[in-house]
View 1 (cartoon, rainbow, N blue to C red):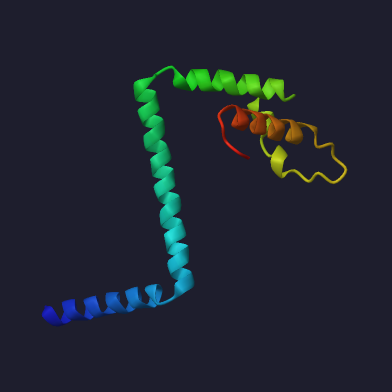
View 2: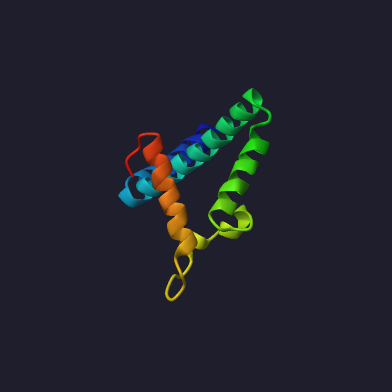
Length: 113
């Protein structure tokens, strides 16, 4: 029994050394851990907001729809992917308007963009 346990522990230790001995794998794992932590933190924050203010989701949907209309989109989903669109020959209108709006809002709250 102890021989089997010792072999399994030795195998795990070799794998652990192999991963943590490789700097790039370490970086990748830390990035993954940070991503997962951020995802969970976002879910906790959303749950906290909805617990404190049950009407927040509806209010945010209305505000987002209003912002989309103000920027020239039919609805918020119409703006999806616009920032990543190929702009060669396409007018940059909505993208520029969204960026300008973000800069103005940031300035209103004292952020430098």
